[in-house]
Amino acid sequence: MNWTPQSGWETRLYIGGAFVAGQGAVMPVENPATEENIAEVREASTTQADEAVAAARGAFEAGVWANPALRREVLLRLADLLDSERAEFSGTMISELGSPRNLMDPLHIGIPLQLLRYYADLATRDLTRDLGPDGHAAMPSASIVRYAPVGVVAAIAAYNYPLLIMALKMAPALAAGCTVVLLPSPQAPLAMLMFARLLERAGVPKGVVNFVAGGVEVGRHLTGHPGIDKVSFTGSVQVGREIMRQAAGSIKGVVLELGGKSAAIMLPDGDMAPQLSCHLRYLRNAGQGCASPTRILVHESRYEEFVERSRTLFAGVKVGDPWNADTVLGPVISKPHRERVEGYVTRAVAAGAEIVAGGGRPDFAKGWYINPTLLAGLDNSFEIAREELFGPVGVLLPYRDIDQAIATANDSTLGLASYIFGPLEQARAIAPRIRAGSVYINGGGLSRMDAPMGGFKQSGLGREYGPEGLMEYLEPQHIQWALG
Image (cartoon, rainbow, N blue to C red):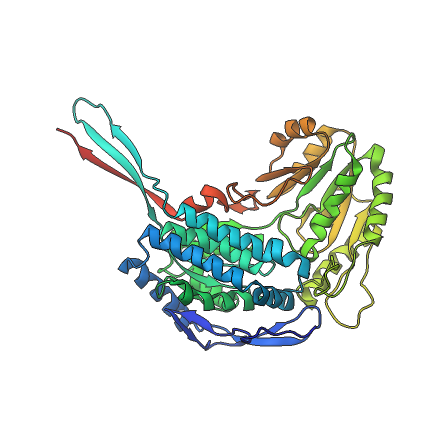
């Protein structure tokens, strides 16, 4: 479906309260379902990136964003404006991502709304701690610990959930009193740039929020910029390492969410129906999700049954036009990414793995589609069981006993999330033994704004969501005074 928003695509940058044309190279934006170029965005020049940082720094130091009541009011207005224009934002993300229509309200729009409103309420919370007198007879004193905004934040988003990731970074940073420079993914910049249209209407002071566009060079310029106090990034482990190196020059802090290779342990006494639902979790958004449970650990006594029932489930997964309400699996983001995912599958089969459900491509004339794919006949040492694919591909790993299952789940350089399906009491006893930032039992539940999300090991640094997400953008300050 060819669709454009009523007001047209937003392709301009937003710097210091004004929309400006980018001065850098042209970035074409492609519809992954049709392969058509739907828009062109010009990157920011390094001078424009400097201007965005200067605008954020000026707003921060002028104190225009220092009032917690204003921060709460503006964040709530931003949520209301986004809510009122959800059709425009949904259509934009279907077009630039190929993400199915049925994911828009619950995930792509719904969670950003919750995040804006949740952090709006935290904006006015007084976190000051009164330590009272220290009781030291020789030099009596009293102390408080207050929390100050860290300053100017560079927020760099991935393409898979543009508004959600933007809100994960922007909402707590703004609630804390920081100012921000946001850099969308060059593969999906349109919804984030469209969000800039809401800022003035919501009453965001000039310079508090700035949007630039660009690829590696613009990102590198921001992460190493001396005017940036903290970097928040969502993306790959490789890029996360580079950002840490770039941030080290000015000893700035980082928040990194770097993906995962999540294990799902199917307990042998569990009901298989909910266990099979794990497939739908990693097929969601064409497998382009950081916490996807793509390593599926099944007890050897139920392995063949799980394979057969997985084939039946895969046969019912609708692959197709993301505008159709019954589509489960849309395209991946680009042709190179499809080739990357297919390369992993090809190498795994060459090494002895077997595709036991799905596989290949659908017979469509256009679009970067991959059929859901399930592999067996491999172990946890295979490349495809160790590296994040960001595609609709799962691997089955048999286990003998619970200790082996836990060891396999933990045998990864990543630790963002893990899943356990089975009797609740048994699953809760196992959960603390899993080295992952989140453990979901029997599918978990809806996203909780008040619970932290982040990874162990190389899945990242810091936490998002919850009060912990706010604290990433605050610095504790001890104030002490003499008594008597």
